[in-house]
Length: 284
Length: 284
Image (tube, rainbow over all chains, first blue to last red; front, top):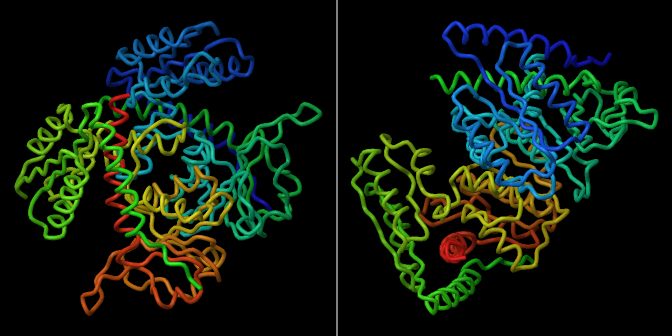
């Protein structure tokens, strides 16, 4: 019988814990501050940023939603980020992607102070993740949320064979680093991989995040594998679906995350958790 | 018949090319400058740093060898690095490891300006390697040298199954990133891996760098694999040997690097190449 990894419930528990930490900080006169920068009017981005700001408010943060027109110049955007870097009330800054063509994404990421880089995208924080030298640093929220889920469900990672499908900066690469740091044996598959089956059939844990609806089937994996679905797609009927054929894969997996209600809620709860981390670290 | 990948010869060719680039820079009034910082009197480190400084001299660089006593304080060492950061005649700075216990290695690495970080260890440069966004940045010299060897011998990497044994900051991790950026399918094995055989028997390219003499045998790999030996050890007779049982593995591999004369010479030639890269980039 497959176990459903309930991200919605876990996220709720994580949020309760975060709210408690916020209360502890407030008792010391510190209010965690999250700044979300939204450029343009992409409908999905507007929903995401609103949800993030709302969740921050709910947990007792100070939250700022900075809206900038899609015609904003690079200089204007970087100046806004620098203002937020200098603002002692703000502990986490995130700039919602995608950004318009005139904006250099790397410049944006590298302008956000590493100490306020709540998305964990700044190369300094990425480098610290790979160095794994035991210091505090923020990590991309989706992979960190995945690791929390596995931990909470007591699914061990050390010594396990892990396959990650997709090598994105946001998910695949940082997740690989987190997994290796926890002693997993990791293979990352991508469009140029020529023998995906060999790795997939051997994997104890499979993580998929490539944005292709119903990409992974029961016949792709080994019996009893744990399957983590990072995809969010709309099917032909307009329903939210992941990269995993859920019903099919559920027949052979030992555990699986649903979409919606799996990795998605963990990402936003991790963003909140990490904002409080940054607030605590900045006051240590 | 196994092909011997002759690192000594390739390094010589690379050095000739580097010397030509130095001449071109000098014609513009620029002399590449390499600063090597040696702390204490570790015999191996003394040999390494002397060799590096000598090679730099031979290629027409300005080279500085800064010797500091093993009792140096963290503040004194960082001050020296900051002076070198500020010196316009210096384009590359390396601090020879190992460092004495009173020195925080991460602080040293992060104090070296990313633009002069000729070893490619600064987290900013590591982060850029993982982001793979097409910009210039220095990379750890051993893995970069390995990639150059494969390229020069026209051994393709894209779509190939690669196994890297060892996950060090100096070799395994940056090599994995370079390989993934070139579309290889990479699995990194380490002491906690439980099923190394499954991956090794399938690998087109095997890279070993764990510092165990004669660790890899013919029976570990598949017929026709390419084997890259990053290890440097002394056997019972005091001879330099790699991590690969060379004679044994040569009977099944299609290509192999010897020790000495394989990866070692490429590392130092790559250090020279990268110093010139940094000098060119700083003058662009």
